[in-house]
Image 1 (tube, rainbow, N blue to C red):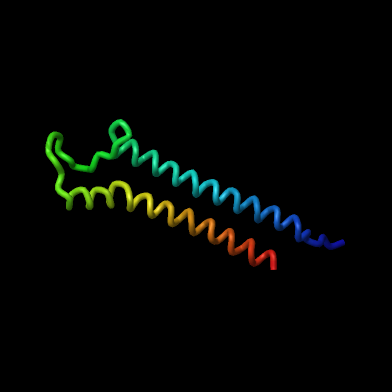
Image 2: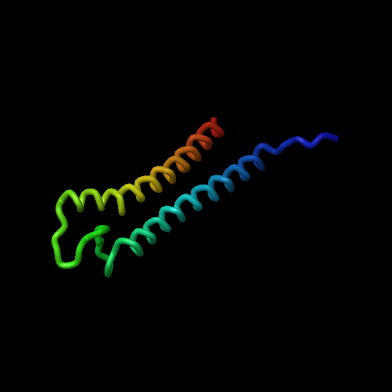
Length: 97
């Protein structure tokens, strides 16, 4: 007797996989936020890398530090999480046809 795969069971496995992937991706977004806060803030305010105490950083330094310390790290993590979510949406749409 040959076992026939249950189409509904396969959907559940794929849903479980998508839930796990999305959860892990979002956890990494949260972790990178925590890392940024830990490494680049003081009392919840952003502190640019290399900013000398008591001196005003230049605008160029602020731009460079903002991109390197915060924006670039967040953008990479968010783009990765968004790609995982988009892939899950695409697979779900394909499966529902």
